[in-house]
Image (cartoon, rainbow, N blue to C red; front, side, top):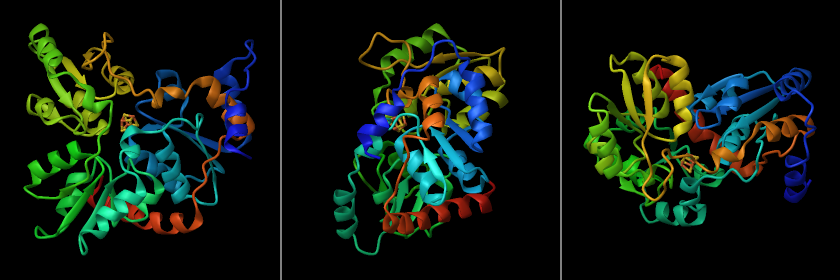
Length: 328
Ligand code: SF4
């Protein structure tokens, strides 16, 4: 089936009189499908998912599921990661247009050329990359395990880190390493306004500023806590503070509020908008209607070239093995 046909099914009209939650649940059971959702999905999708997590957790779930169909409610590279890990399963994403500006900032041919210019260097890639970039990578990382995986290599190892320059700079600063960085970034995390965050801090002087390491350094410098989406969530549960200014995609606030209903979560605002929070437009392409169509028509499906899959699975498995050893 062509991509255009897939997109047609994706947007097929959904009868107005059906109960979407019940129908999605019925289809999931009938088809032995599992719904995995990223924290940046809308609240209704997070609530109906079998599992909600960050990129590392979603990969770990995909690797161990016995389901015949994996519906990955996230963006394209997450679907690809699941397909690489489970080449014999059907992997679906509700909206095939759900891309990622960070993955797009690292085209595989240019990255391969960069790698060739530094023979002998170990290549560490963030999971937010295409399958083709993973295929030229030694070990994949997520923001949850990046520090530990980098530190698992001897100090004198020459490392290429891609594609996120902000995460790479942050890891360099906390580990004392001097990794060569690919110059990519995520449009959501680059957008946060330091000025507006500091204004919010004046308004909420007791609030902790908690920040994802994909943000720029000036934001990281004024933060009380820096960590992956999962680490930020854990921190809000453990912290004695009652208010948090959250500098990452605002979807995670849904789970933060569920876990800590008595605490207050204030989304950090972006630079060039009147909107109070910062959303990933790619993540928000997925809707309950598209999730329903996706399960009903078993489309759109993610495919990965066989040769690329065979190469790309090695660095992902390596990440999962190291993470397991480290108890992550
Ligand atoms: S928030 Fe940024 S890194 Fe995450 S999917 Fe959206 S564009 Fe990609």
